[in-house]
Image 1 (cartoon, rainbow, N blue to C red):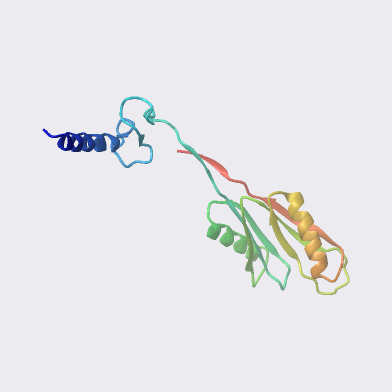
Image 2 (tube, rainbow, N blue to C red):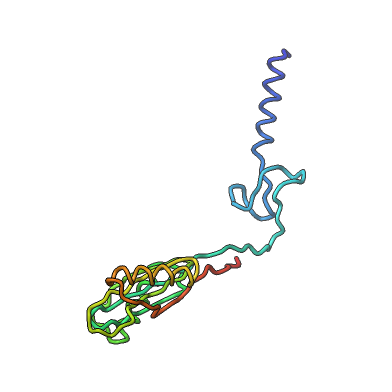
Length: 168
């Protein structure tokens, strides 16, 4: 055999060994639990029946009836749509006739800032989300005051929704 032929055979054999994967017993190649390497150790061999964990995002929402001022809220939902639907349903259950979705937030805190004075002058609430209640409150109070001509605002509602650890 020539050197070129021997080199070609060795090259082909090395390619086959690179394609092998280490999979737990009962798991076929291509599964995310399979890792690189063969059965020679250093692979990702995981014991059968291992519990896997991951963080799953949660959503919260607010809905408002501008005529009555009713605000429906939700928190802790695994989908944005479910959070929105619950907030609107709660707004309607409180007597709101024209409840409309206003605001969603994911893995964070949300607040509603409202004007403090009772001057019968129309005012607009401010909805704000942030990683913490403190940050959201500061931003919402500042935004509410700017939006309402410098009037004093306060937080009328606050909620947080955090990711949930899922065991699979």
